[in-house]
Amino acid sequence: MTALLPMTARRTAMFAFLLSVTAQQASAEKFLLQASNLLGEPSQVTIDLQLGGDLIVPGATEEGPTDTKRVLPLSMQGQFSYQEKMLKDGPRARSLRLYEQAQGTEKTDEATIEVKLPKKLNEVVCELRDGRTRMQSCEGLLTREQCDLLDVVGNTLVLNRLLPNREVEEGDTWNTDGKDMAAILGLDNAGICEVSSVVVGEKNDQVQIRMAGSLHGGVDGAALEMEIKGAYLFHLREKRITKINLVVKEKRKIGDATPGLDSTAKLSITVRPTNSDASFTKDLLATASALEIEPQGRMLFDSPQRGYRFAHAGNWYVTAGRRDLVSLRLLEGGTKIAHCNVTTLPPRSAGRATKLEQFKQEVKQSLGENINEIEAANEWTSSTGHNCLAVFANGTMKDIEVQWRYYLVADDDVQRVSVVSTVERAQLDKFADADRLIVDSIELVGTADEETAAK
Image (cartoon, rainbow, N blue to C red):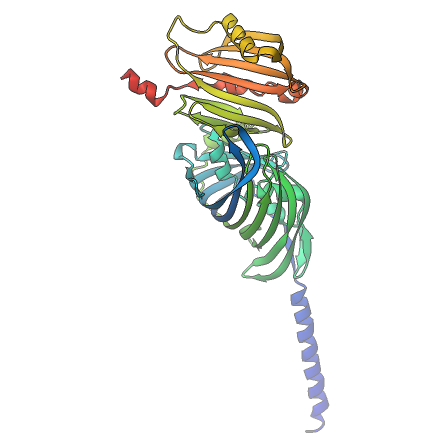
């Protein structure tokens, strides 16, 4: 009996050693965190967004803006559901989304705004351009409100760029590139990005990952800081991120065309493969692949109460509006380079339309001593069938050389539209006739008052 004790002890020691080796091997299990080629593979996406905080807007009086700020408590919520199919990967990644639901509600003390994507525009192409995702429906242009609704944090077009594309094990960490993080968060740029991820475990073929960090960047011409915390799952068999929860704290300064923000957003995103791709017809995929999207995007400003609609590049921002006037600013690289006023004017009947020479005299009278010369005057018929007049005048304002660009868009018996752009002459090359799209695309649709009078 006593002779067996050493053997038993040796077996016990060997068993303990094997258990230790097995435990070490298990803890050192490696996972390849690299998304598979998802081109042509449909996914079903659901997103829930909740946001609370303060909207910070510059103060203003009847005389104009002031140095004061107004703080408006803000709450937002959004729900999204769509199928997505990748059409192209790389720097110009592109996908087609078929939205089943896209709606959001924004509440402040002053207003409640509800935005919903209409079903007729639910076929949306998303394309990465210079690090920012641009969106356009296959059936027509989206308004800025609709684009902002869809451009939600956690962009699934580029979500898998959170991955390190290498083998890792529990405890391993990696940083996310600033350009990729900006694209995922819907920003224009990320100057400083210190966001890292760490593997915390694996269960049911899903690698559990946590992320945290901070980011300094910009969006729509405004500087911002973000603190980011989140957790996401990488499915080993599906080879993609299938779920992510994010908490994003943001402090955004007031920009040249946008309000400031101090908020906390909470998002939950799920992505799963689906075999239900019958809606992605051959013709629709061909249309989505061929759709041309401008570098700044292209949007629709639709104002039936003012009697018109028009297209504009995405870097034009509406900054103010009254019953008969809309003001816009053009940003280039986050800097304001032009201002534009679109004004509704009373209609004129046939035979009383303004002539080009008369329009020139009106421009001279309006500018007074500021004008130095008329650089150009022109008349044409727009693609929407309206008569267009243009007068460009050079002059000075507060010792700055300026070009004023006056347009008049008119038709018989409907309200006319005046468009006036103000550009520093030093910025004309950057401006690149950016107001011409607005003018050429203006469609005079009449107002409710005109329709009532006609009856």
